[in-house]
Length: 91
Image (cartoon, rainbow, N blue to C red; front, side, top):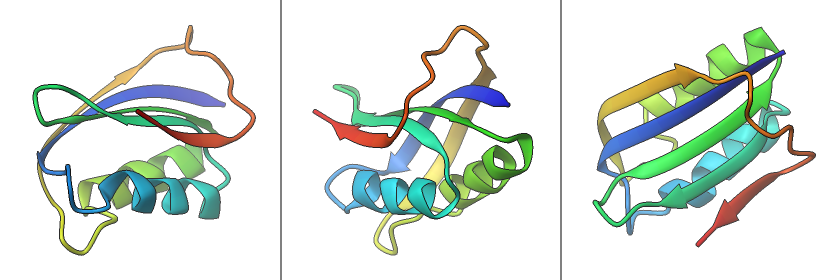
């Protein structure tokens, strides 16, 4: 299992990005959270199999929202992240 923390920048707020990210996570059986940040970015914590996390990261990089545009993604593995049972949109 793999746990990652991601910060996504670009046109990612006000375009349905968080909800489309949740749909992608649910499709891939990835759990975690997604939330807007005050600086206009989106933060994601994700937990799942290595293969599912790799696919999830690619979907996020490609922007799960048709109106969104991702310009930069910072990805950090973090084995200390909480293991969620679902994927939630917060704030």
